[in-house]
Length: 205
Length: 212
Image (tube, rainbow over all chains, first blue to last red; front, side):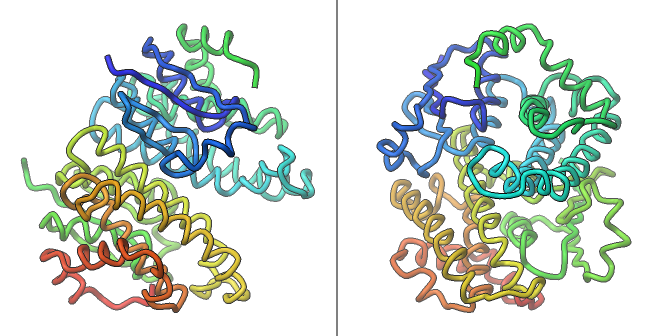
């Protein structure tokens, strides 16, 4: 078995989906959590000056979704056919587009930038959430309302969306009203025993 | 493998569709290269997976999102990297290019005339730092990899992606390679390699003109 080390900050953020893939598959790994004040010193030694970084037997891989996809492929959470994998990728890309749209709101809501949080929530965040979650709701329905976004088993997009919902619901009240099938995916994913166990014992962030 | 009929739909510009078009030409695979005029878009929008382009259609199926399409085709064509780790490196570098495109969005919208604004100010404040950050990553990777291509010993989809991106940098900024690639000799050489590839040259010579 390869030696895995995942380096990321002491938070869920972009690293959580990869941590979940390790726990779901029962694969041991070094969960290297970098305190924020250590980061400036080690940044220049990373391939792209960013985290997360996955180290596999000494070889480094950056970019959160490239890491997630690589691990999902290794552990069987990337879809069961080439077309299913491509759809997982497409939804992940759509997720990134959406994150990009609401980034200014998240920066203000999390205290990293100045701004009118209420105004941005109503004018920017809520419409973007509506637009993206409408796509997700339709996808869940087209996929057979089986509790997964693609195919008949967990894929990494299920993990990405479920974790993100946990972030948004602390910032935007009633964000997911009208999206019962998406909520059903989150329920199914978070009650998966290995994941449930990790979620209960992981550090509070 | 049965002959699949691929149809790629994108706007009548290079933009996010061009690396995919080049991928088909590089692989020598025929496809329907549907180029949409902007006024025809509203009619089509609701029948696309995500209300956006590019879109790939084949075998009565649809696939949206440029990166997902590129990855799917490149894997079919053997142009995605030769091992799982190489494939992941290709993905990671492509993600950096997408990060760059997102970072310059404010500049891009003014440069292509969709929004009014001060292009010069945005070039200095928004475009240049993002451009330098991306090209530094790519330069580091080219030096580390050593083959002249970004990943492995042969051309992959992300080489096309970077090639198109550098072209776009020059078109949208109105600056030539001398200024854009100053200090990035490795990238200049990489551009030359990509755009002199025997399967890319005839495509470049015959493709319809678009300003970006």
